[in-house]
Length: 241
Image (cartoon, rainbow, N blue to C red; front, side, top):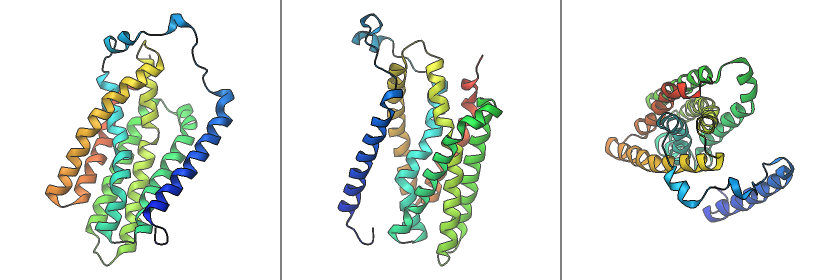
């Protein structure tokens, strides 16, 4: 960011990401789910609307878990730059740490699922991740402005907790949504997407208004931490009979 304009920076990343994703999809093509070509199994367009229903337990848990990912993307760099006062290059570090934590957690999800029941694991991770995020966020807010490096370190730890906490939860609720519905997976995911986009629009506005009215990004970010903890209350949707 200190050597490239924002246009070259974002444009270059977009090109690289497109090429990498295309290559990965090509490599995965042999093992991807094949399209259903049986006409009898296709749902009429009218059925897509008339069969629409909201699984409030799953949708609530998914929103509570996924919002910290969206909030991190929106606010982590702004928080590091405006509240802590680090350079634009370092301001992206909390987001990088968050994504590394998410990737690490999801790569190890299978091992965790072999040892623990999913709903127990989700409850623990929600409280562990959300609680750790709030604690270190509060510590960061108390660190004097002249100690930028310490504040940046505690911020990175806060987002590492958030990443680990949310890593397994969002896929778990996706799986639960498919299991609890008789509709095809693509339809279920589409319905969840509609509910999630609508809900996220409202919650994002609440977070933005909170930041504006209180003048504190830490308080605004705390909302996403509390929501992550709240995902524990929806974990009963993940129980397998």
